[in-house]
Length: 185
Image (cartoon, rainbow, N blue to C red; front, side, top):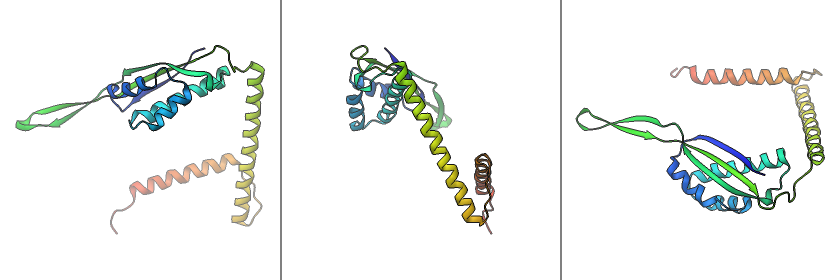
């Protein structure tokens, strides 16, 4: 089964991105990630994230085993080009093209169906993850309530939605104050 992931508009020229793409093509996923960790190119970190994203797609959507996956194909295309100008002699202007690239990655299984999970197993795992998230959210809300009680000395229960809205307003105000503050006093 094929799994794809795509990364658009990376501010790296496609010619440079293709060097890393050719390096990884045909490797198993763990080997490819190890190779990208060692590689010094700027594209390697983006490519590693893309591979991890494709692996997560395969595991969560299709129940594939990440040790059975390999990089089948990596297509690097040209994205939009930003055009800039550099002043030159005698009033001329030299054109500068800042190129971007689009990367499309395809992973496939080495042995078809090896280590693949069934629908029931995937549903059980999703339910477990949802329950864990609910528990974590409850714990976070309880901690926030305890902090507000300790600070104010009162036993007020404020809903978590109001707290989030207030914190967003505070950050917005701080942002505005930072930009529009007086420079001299």
